[in-house]
Every structure is written in C-alpha cells, then in structure tokens.
Image 1 (cartoon, rainbow, N blue to C red):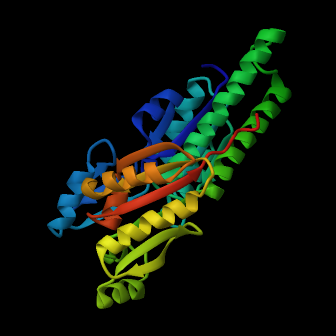
Image 2 (cartoon, rainbow, N blue to C red; image 1 turned 90 degrees about the vertical axis):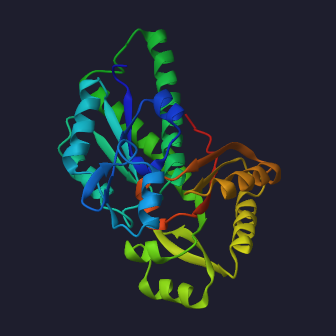
Length: 313
C-alpha cells in the first residue's frame, strides 16, 4: 500500500506467523552458530536443533544481524512505498541488534524510528503487535480522511513529511506504552547456559548450582535478573503461575507461555492461566526460537504478561 507505515522487528519476537502476515511485518533474523556452522534463526535452524546441540554439549553461540541486513529491510520498505518505518527490537542489554538497526536507520531513504523494547520473546512481540494495531488505526483514519477530501497522499512536501513523522511518533508511543506495562518471568533448569552466554553473572550461576535451587528470573531494566529461588521444579512452576496471576490482576491482558522442549509443562500451565486470569484477551503457547534457546537451555518455562493498550487514535 503506497504511503503506509512499515514495521520491522527481529526474530526473537517469536510472533505468530498469522500476525506477521496480517500486519506485513518484516522479521530480520539473528544468527545461531552450532559448532562451525552458522544459521539464520527461524529460517535454517529450529528450537529442536538447538536443544539437541545443547544436550550433546556442542558449542552454541548467537550473533546480531548486520547493519546492512537492516539497511536492506529499510530500502525494501521504501521501494514498496512506505513513508516511514518503526523498527522494534530486543533489549540492547542482551544484544547488539538495536545498535545495528540504528546504524542502518541513519542512512535510510525514509524516516526510521528504532525502538529498544528492553524485552525479548513475546514481551517484545506484544510491543510489535501494539505498534501494528496503532498503524492499522492510523491507516483507517487516513483512508477515511482521503475519502472525505480527495487527497490520496496525506499532503505534499513539508506537510506530508511532518505528518509522517507525527504518525511515526504515535506508533512508537503505542509500542513504548505496551513495553512499560509488560512483564516477563521465567524458570530454567540450570543457570549454566545463561552464564556461558554472559547473560547472567558467574556468581549468581555458582550460587544456584551450589545450593541446588531452581531459579525464577525476570526481565528488569532490559536485563535478566534473579527474582526468587525455589527448591524444586514443581514448586518453581507453581510459583511462576502465582506470579503471573498476581501480575495480571483484573486488567485486560495478553499472556504468552514460552518453553523450550517442555510442551508437557507449558500446555497445562497455559490452561490453568486461562481459568484463573479474568481479563485474559489472547493466550499464546509457543516454543522459543533458537537464539533464546541457546541461552536458556532445554526445560525453559516462561510467562509474559502484557497489558492491552487501547490506541487513542
């Protein structure tokens, strides 16, 4: 659609494919290296591949997309007639992806707003969906205005550029509002994979291993931080459920239950949350992709609680 606003995110958002298709979201993949082979997440390597590699003690690492990869995505948006791009990504505390997007945005042929969600997984994905809903509302309003005054371009020259910038700011505000209210909590069988990837301190990993505790973690300030320590896996999962219910309270929310090679844990938890959260709008159950899987290891169970933000436009 000429004159539209384009959305770009990265592969760690783990969006449902239906949403990607509906909102025409461009997903830029991060890379996963298993031994000496490098693969594009979501394209060439699966969560199962990474889980098996980790279980067999193979070396698994991840890397950000290159600035040129983002530049190509922004050029493609411009060539498709977009008047601006909102590019929303995983926390800059966890990856250099935001930096790569910013470098590309500086030379893009159309305005690009890069958003550091300070989140990951469907916590990030919820921000992208909020932005997509905002874009849809703006385009519907614009279409109504066009039918009323006959101006199909939303203004020419400086006026049109100013309108595009204003619309980009509104979309960014929607994504940031969703991010501000979103919380992610998770359980891992071991802290070793996070320690190896540098996503949690060595001291924290050693404490968890020495005491044989089952750690509950959360996203705080864009980082992965310890939340609580529980003695057994069953108690940790029960506590994860309680924390999610408390966070959701009575407000309208979307909830995602993520896992890695642990559907037997994720699906029953999701059904219990469906019964216990009165304001539940959407409930997703999904396996995390290879990039996050490489850092958390098999057995991950996570819950993302994301408030439903009503767009003001």
